[in-house]
Amino acid sequence: MKVEHLIDIIGADFYTGVPDSQLKPLCNWLINNYGTNSQHHIIAANEGNCSAIAAGYHLATGKIPVVYMQNSGEGNIINPVASLLSPEVYAIPEIFIIGWRGEPDVHDEPQHIYQGKVTLKLLEDMDIEAFVITKETTEDEIKNVMDNFNKILSSGKSVAFVVKKGALSYDEKVVYSNNNTMKREDIIEHIVSVTKEAPIVSTTGKASRELFEIRERNNQSHKYDFLTVGSMGHSSSIALGIAFQKPEQKIWCIDGDGAMLMHMGSMAVIGANSPENFAHIVINNGAHETVGGIPTVASKINLCQIAKACGYKYTACVDNFDALDKELDIIKEKRELCFLEIKATIGARDDLGRPTTTALENKQNFMKFLNEI
Image 1: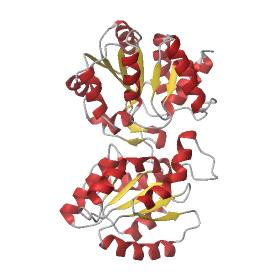
Image 2: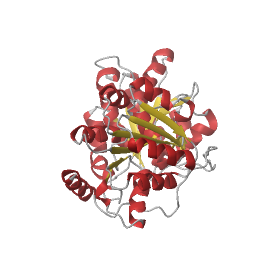
Image 3: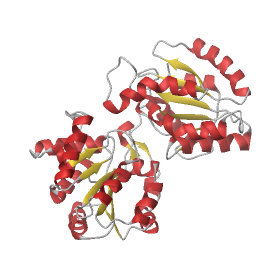
Image 4: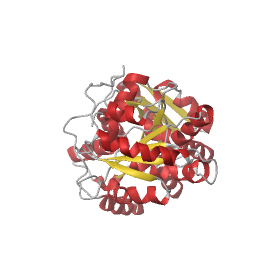
């Protein structure tokens, strides 16, 4: 189904959400027609954030907003759905459009498998009636569903469209880019050359995939790295938990701008506790690249000032490899909480692979390594 037909049938004039690869046609259409931050479209930091933004839109207009997300974000909407949107509280209706990763009987990555199994069950538990859109779904079916959904929405309850892979299409090509020059994989290679055998916690998406392949090329063990393949936005908190238990060991966290934004409150906790053996690196390409390169707001804000305000002792920002190498050497020797922002271009190799070890094997090898140091 062409995404513009779905948009016409829904009839809403405000969308907010967190980008998802299954919903790339929708995201591309919204950006082409509304931009990234406007009265009609806002890209949010996390799914609870966009549910609240949508609630504000409803309060201001009385109209029904649309919230889009990957199904991994369902956990982030449970609180606003239960304690804000619910008919037993404020009765604020929203239409959720949810990309279905980890769909049963369809091969996907390990972090999506369980989430995929419980996607519809979670919606049922939240009393959100759902309709699954497939490649075979017709416009007439969607029209009939919307007739029923409109009755539900009028009672103050929310509804959801769950979108299977390939169910939506958009003919116009959208290319996302920035003016930065350093590639993320090259950046991580420079980080690994400095950190050597120190523990690294890497964020979800392509950063962890690239770290895995760099270790392969270098004939290095993967035991040094914890690859946070899911749980977007939580790698820095995982690293903080490790840093406190290994005070004599430098702990490195390779984060992404989208992940950092998703749960930025963790930076306040890190800064307030200020572990002197923690190095927090954010590779900032201003994009949700793993799901298509759709923009974040990270290129519009000063991450170093945020880190300083949160209590990080040393902060720096670099946009070239000479400066990167210099700062990595400085941070390696420092015994204080450090923050490094690295400006990166958007893009990755087409043949970028995925970890060949399981998540459980990664955890076990990493724990054994930590126990030895």
